[in-house]
Image (tube, rainbow, N blue to C red; front, side, top):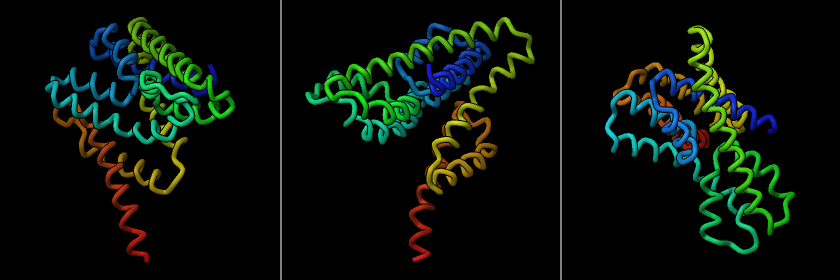
Length: 221
């Protein structure tokens, strides 16, 4: 229930409002929070289904969106596996790794005894998931009870939270470059076929920033 957890709840309140606005079933939305546990991928999935995108294309888009979490899993896994690594325990811990889990895990796990880290990481991840599912349900039902303008304002929690997390986690110039390029690409890919505009803006901005960061130092040298 720390500040990152509350920000996470607010973010998923916006996601619940998005589900209601698109007419997406609440049970399916809660299941996506439990199983996918990555809000950008969930937004791609729900938006794509609402836009009538094909399932194979959505599966590829969701998988590519999840690839961004691989470096977080790799960097956090040594702190989660404990002195006696077990495959099932590691898979469960890896499933819960997202931005909030990664930030809080790096902060909290070093202070936990090694033998207790797998259980602590699982409890922390599951607790964040339950908070997110609660926020999803609150957003879904609250949006239906609110007047139209307030319901629209509630939906803004999702992009606002995205922006806050992006800016908060930006450490290097390439991070800021990816944010700027992604924002610049967004209007160009708006209303992309299949509802994949968020995907193209994120992947396009991040890819361009990656290559520019590799090319520019070489030119300076």
